[in-house]
Length: 81
Image (cartoon, rainbow, N blue to C red):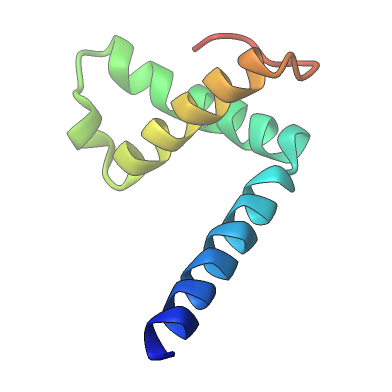
């Protein structure tokens, strides 16, 4: 019985996480990624590595993922990074 409850909780957690992922505000995320790109691009062009940009390494990876997903889903305003 305890295993069935644990399994049910795990399944509900997966369903909830999928629902959250489906409710991404694409336009807000794309705007945030554009702003990040504008801030990071001059540093990268100057020869600085991603690690020199500080905490944005994680942000850059998220933006790359957001851009790929937006292009795949054909969200207006999405362009490959």
